Image 1 (cartoon, helix red, strand yellow):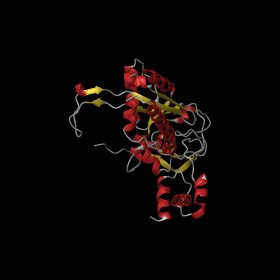
Image 2: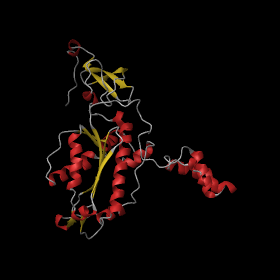
Image 3: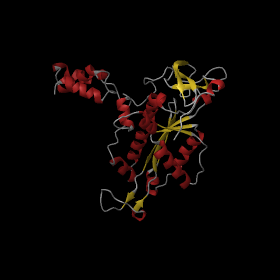
Image 4: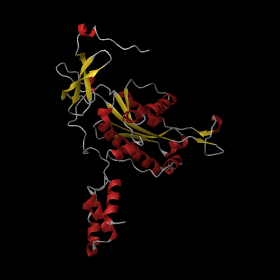
Length: 329
């Protein structure tokens, strides 16, 4: 394969490591020894390669400015132990409850507040893994959920939150105080026709940071054996998921419909606020938002790009008297 062809392929698969195709090409030439006497000198020069960076603080933002609100938005991800059972096959098996050798429990969790750098996390000790006792770390994530106004996760409504609720009640905890949810998986499925809705694949398409490679099921197996290094790796994998999910959310935020109303966290009597990000930088779009019996002015947020509508109708009560509605049957 020619240097340039290979460089293009490497660049497409490793955009985080190279700034452009030429840098990838230079790297290929160095590795192949096509630079003659300068080979080892250039190999030692790391300027052509961007170091791996899991800190998303300085990543390009899909909005103009961060709007300060009182909303506590928690970005969350959990990793659970597998269910172990006795089976007689590997395909299309119905496993009865008396075949289960050990049930699932929480291995690690990670969470961060939106726009904050600090990531909170919890992981079991090898001793806790063998006892299948996650009570200590479950209390930690419960406290964050209890404080949150909005909880954001990928597959939150069918995995993370129901799983956590199960561990809460098993460990004798009361329900956290009410919060709203943003399930990025649900909104991605609803709005886009991606080939896959997995977080890593979506981030690849959006040129965002990717998930950490765990090496497959072996990491979970090592965790179940109580290996400390495996539990450390799982925690790191969990932490990176939370960081990259924040970037995914900010990119798809204007597409989330309905988004929890951020304007409620910046009550302002003098101006409208964007329901998605809380910005006051809004402009009328020049067209109406039509319901079956009314028209409202449509707005565009110049900060995050989301659309909204005013709550006061464009037509008055007298005009609305003559508006008919089609029969539902």
